[in-house]
Length: 78
Image 1 (tube, helix red, strand yellow):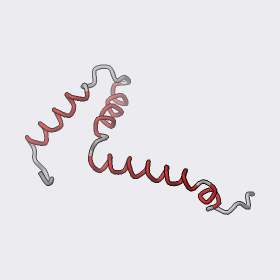
Image 2 (image 1 turned 30 degrees about the vertical axis):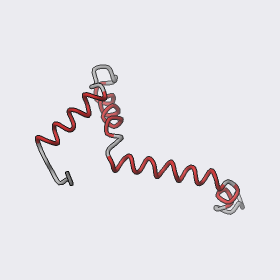
Image 3 (image 1 turned 60 degrees about the vertical axis):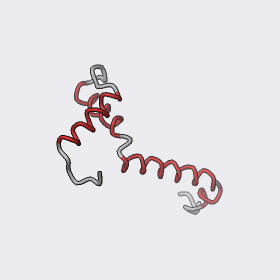
């Protein structure tokens, strides 16, 4: 059983903790802004079809997504 204090790792590597925190914040902001939508689409496509072959290219995905949002406006600011 370790007697190491839980915060000792944080104290010994403050820059590592800061980098992890910044990376988490960057990921979180991309998630809430929707920038990771294409990545999620590819992962979903691969789960359903077993391959990424045949998936939309990124430009076509974003065009399709914005066209769908224009056709079916929901609660959004713009």
